[in-house]
Structures are given as C-alpha cells and as structure tokens.
Length: 318
Image (cartoon, rainbow, N blue to C red; front, side, top):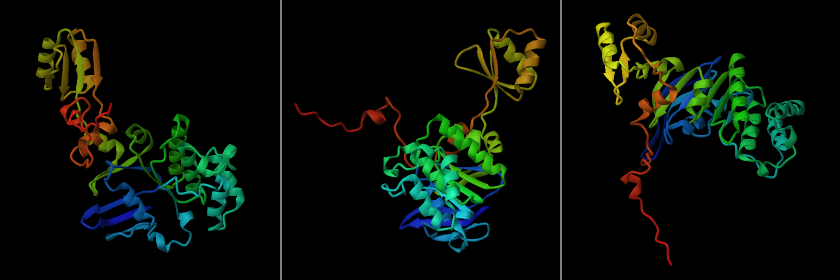
C-alpha cells in the first residue's frame, strides 16, 4: 500500500505538488492521471525517495522508502526506462540490479522470458528500440517479485501486442494482492485496465474514486434517439416526465430523465418509427477532459484557427 499525507513539493516559487493526500490500495489497479506538468512524475519520484518532499509524508507499507529493509522486494518501479548503461546487455543490467539484493540468476532469466526479451538478452541496451527499453524497465521493476509495482507510462513505445501484455500483467499482479500504480495518458487503455483512478491537476488531487463511479459522476447522461417523427415523440417523452432537447438535425433528440429502455417502451407502445436509439455513455476520456479542462498548464491552439495561424514563421531565403 502507498499512503501519501499532505505531500508537497516546491521548487522555488513553483509548487509542483500541493498538499496531496491519497492511498493506493492493494488488490486493484490504480490509474494515476493528469495533464503534462500536473505533478505525476514528481509524486512518483517522492514515493521512491528520489525527490525530498517540502512537506508531508509518503510511506510504503507504513515505512518511507529510505527505511525499507529490502526496497526492490517492497516496490518495483519504472520511472525512466532510459536509465540503463548503454553498453550493458539486458541480462548484464538485470544481473547488476539482482546483485544488490542477492537475487539469483535464475530469477533474472525468468523476468527476461516474462517480458519477451529472451532473443535480445545479450544485446546492448543502447541499441534497444523505445519499446524494448520499456520491456527492460518493466523486467527490472518485477525482478524482486515486489509487493508494490509502480510504473510511469509503461506502454510508451510498445506495439499493440505489448500494450495488451502490460494490461494483462497489471491485472494479474493486482489479482495476487499486489498494489499496482500506473500513470498513463492513454485514457482508453486506463479504462480497460484500472479499477480506481487518482487524478491530479496543478499539483492538487482532483479526484480519487473507483473508475466507474468517477465516469458516472462526470457523465453528460442522456439518451440519443433519431426518428422521422421526432416532434410527436418529443411530446410523448415530455408527457412521461423526460426532458427533451432537439439536436442540430431535426430528427435527433437528446433525452434525459429516462433511460434507453424507458424511451424504447414509449416508442414501442406508440408505434413510433426510429432509426437509432443509444445511451450516450461517457468514456473515461470525456469525464477526465471535463474535470481537467481548467487544470491544463500547457494548452495548444486549435489547428486552423487564428491562434495557431498567427504563429511566427521563418522566411525562406532565395
């Protein structure tokens, strides 16, 4: 379990993490989300003792990282997959890590096989692609079979097969009672992997909830129905207590106050012809964007607008 209490980090006048309190529970996958510059990486670095908090505390199983008897066995982390000596092979790198905790070469070979590195185990890490470097970083995180696994953007650079593998790995680790804490910008992947989400913006915790509850709490709600007889249907739905808003196209209605089943029954009972009926289910990405709309520090202009068109250009000399 990871427990942060009033965790704060300042760099001069800049507050990177602002009195953050949260608990990452064992047995589930927790997604750690936030815009660029929100404080995710700084928080993870403080968890590992790489950055000293300005205030507050963070513990792993009740102890700060510096006081753990066997750190790799308590928490395995992927923070920077490039933090490997480029002239060492994958196996040499993992053996060097293993030597710090008395881990056997047999276990080194196990994680090499587990992460799909068998064919390149003797290849120098400096020659690895981004995806293979990620696999090596994950192998290092799993080396001591830790109780907590924390990974920053673990699917970065991985192909679809690798992304699926990380998802299955995270779910498996959680099913064995381990604490799994993952950051990612891929909302669709988090939605398929995580049970719980912690969202940070400008250093402050904005949400800490089960994923389904978070999405539901920020859902736009409503049912979309398309009918050539939209006016008649709108009257029937309003009489049934629903709120009906016409769309930009006259045949489309957005209905709140009734679910899709309720709308369908009214359609059936009154012989209304429809061409489409669907729940406008909110995705994690949509819920996240609604929550963090005012928390994004680095905002790009919209392509094709004056905001981007006015960007300075260089003259080409002839």
